[in-house]
Image (cartoon, rainbow, N blue to C red; front, side, top):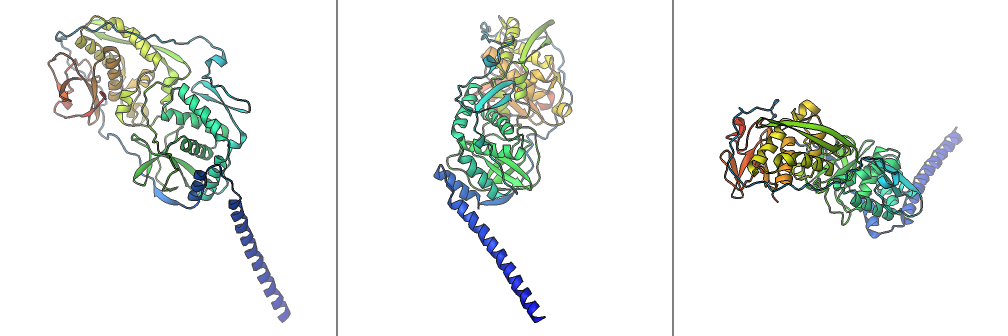
Length: 484
């Protein structure tokens, strides 16, 4: 019996020793793997070492709301009065810049935004109707080991940073330039490519976006919670309705490019950044993105001074599609964004004969009545179940619009066709505009930069220049400066 006990003790010690030896061996293997690692840059080496250690948990805060004051359920109607406007200088003949709108079928090669590619395998994506090809090495199809943790995310960066990503990134930048993509558009393009090369894996696509955006010079992070990886982006503008983390006193938004997500969880990420990746995503738009032409025609009708006008409009459906999941942001972003060339051209052609020869004040009043009555009113809550400000092309695309949408497209037409200065007026639960005229006009106005800007409310049906909604007559609005 004593010999049996001794044998069992030796067996237990031997098994324990083997377990310890196995653990030591695994630790040794892991150490050797790190020793043998080769990095293309010291920056990536230091970053991987940083990622392996410096993670902590951050609470995700619910997205901010821009204005919680309810909008009018119905657009108020002004008492119809005879239009009496003072004499002012005549509108110079409106010049309409010719736009080459391609409607006929084209050869596929001609319809592509072409970038000269080298030899080798390709990846194909469809970006808003445009077929796009890029050189693609299979090494870019980086996998993520399980479980999701900081070590395996650091390993992802190590593998990705040792691929031939530079040529791929250069081609992406060329496509970005040819497509006139702003930062958000660039993210959308990366997202489509990421989904293609990861077989639509949400986690791997977010890691791909993180890597490519960081290598493009943007500050970005990834975080994880359970089995999910989140892309985290700081932004020059606010993103309303998007959850965010506060990291190093900066908001990092939990961005998704395919659908909106609201989170109320803790997310693990790192407090630090890749060297020289300092740019913040900017949602501003200075040029309309180039997308495949998918023209839709509609007729907008309105009556002014007893005369009915019908304005045929052509707009590019893909231009509106570009903004489908655009995050809600500062109103000046919408006000300052241009309409697509197709929409600008058709609106200019349709409105030019109505405005030519009129005084500036009467031409502005015509545009005011056009926006007031040619578009059907409905609040975003009734149309979408949530707040959604429109870029100009979306106002043409969707069946209904509300106060900020009308103010945005009205201000664009005033600047585009009449070359007059305009500002936005931000009231609680309402957005309007004011226009600076050369001549003094009786009516309501605000003072901005020592100049009078006449109230022009595109939602106050049949109201003329200088008429404020009664509800806001004694309310001082915030000014949305569109003059700089």
